[in-house]
Length: 266
Image (cartoon, rainbow, N blue to C red; front, top):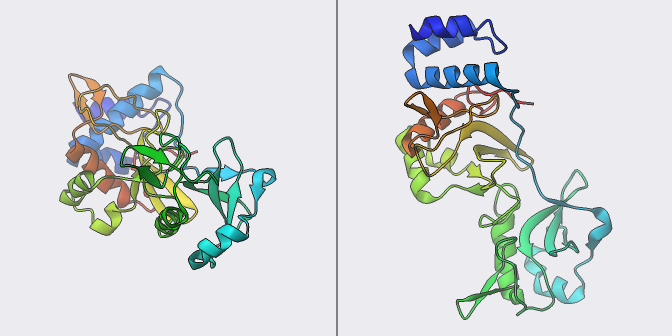
């Protein structure tokens, strides 16, 4: 019955291949994702998935770090580090393509100045309470942590960066056959318009897996060309339990594109 519905729907805007129909017979969860996306295609405009983005600094806002900072960050002399004088200043690294990428580490010469930790990574909690910009040693440690990541962005960046998933969620991924190394490449932006899981391919590429993330399993999930929901409850697309999400991520990682088979990219 379900296959016949899919075959009928395949003549609509979103057409299923024979391979996808065959997969649907043997994989119920995959089939649910197909149904959700196809129904969505009949009722609303679809939006393909876009790759993950990086925060970059306008060249006109870039300035040299200065001799004082050069001396204190000499351990990082192999990297082309600069200061971006944006609304909230931060440390940036010059990339091979000529862009200045944010490391997400906050910058200020007022080392004990209050730092907006909900916008950018602040390197020190003064008295374990107040986030401040931090002393040179704190900045060195924070920049080292950022530059050790594949994307040169601090792993605890609160905004504008794809942050690695936590250890518990990574363990759920591993229960579905994803290696710890691969789980370490899965990240989320934590933003309402980027609520899918992403996969860090290399320094310059963050792929959208299209699998929607979420902590509440039964919350309604909008299925679209770039959004694959991991479960259906009472006929409604829902985010699904972490293990269900992980199962869909595992499916995505078997693809050359690292995106779920139902995903359509821009």
